[in-house]
Length: 329
Image (cartoon, rainbow, N blue to C red; front, side):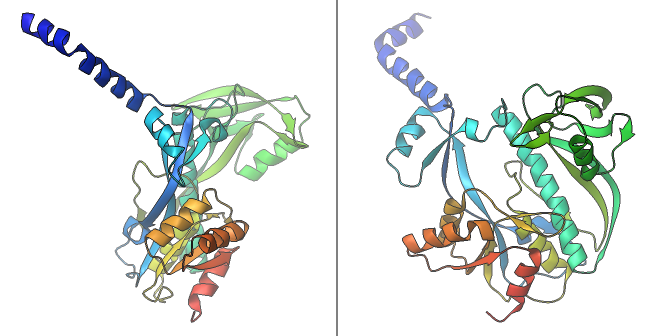
C-alpha cells in the first residue's frame, strides 16, 4: 500500500493527465461527424444455392459516421470533408442515438422486403407473401406509440395494410383520438393516438411500414452486420438479387456501385450524404455509379470538383437500372 501511495504521489500529474485524456476520448458531444465512406460488396451478402454467380461486383455506398468526442470535434474543424452534424438533425422528436439506430435497422428490414419483391417480380420468379406485419419504425414524443410496435387494429378494425391506416387518419377529425391495438413486447396493448395537422397534412406523428415474410423460389438469404442499417442500399440490393436469380449477364465484369431507396413499385428514392458516397466510389475505383434523379446534380458536381473519372448514371426506377445495364455502354 505504501508503494502505491508513493507512486501516486510521485506521478499524480501523469495520472491526472491520463484520466483527462480518457474522459475526452470517451465523452460524446451532441454531434455526428460525417466523412467519406466506401463500398460494400453486395454479392457477398446474398446466399443462394440455385443462383448464378455475378460476373463483376455490385456495391452499396456508405457514409462513415461517428459520434463526436472532443478530439474528433477539433479535428473536424481542420480536416477537409469531416463535417459536423447535430444529432438533433437526425432525431425525430426526442430520440436517443439508440432509438435512431433501431429505427434505421427497421428501415433496413423494410428495404430488404421491397428489394426482394421488386427483384422477383421483375424476373417473373415465384414469390408469395406468407405473412405480413405493420410495424412502427419512428415516432414523435408522447404520441403513445413505440418503435417496434406491431399495429393490429385501429378503432376495432383489423388492419391489413398501410393504405388502410392512411385512410383512417385522413378521414378523422384533427385532435380526434384513435384507439390503436398494438403488439408490444409480445403483449397486446390499447393505445390512444391523437390525429394532428402539420404542413396541411393530417398525421399521427409516427412512421409505419409493412414487414413481409416471403416464400421464394429460388430461395435466398441476406446477411448484414449489426453496424449496417438504413434504406439507402435498397436499389443495389434489388439489383444484386435480380442478377443472382437470373442467368442473363448484365454486369459484364464491371465494378458497379449505387445508392438509392427502393419502394414496392420499384421507384428509386433520394438519399442523404451523396457527397461522401461519390468520394467513396472514387476511392474504391468503381466503373459506374447509379444515383437517384434527385441526387444526380450534386453527384456530378462533386465528381467534377474533385476531377473524378466516374461514370455517374441517373435512375428513377428499377427498370431504368436494368435497361441501362443491359445496353452495351
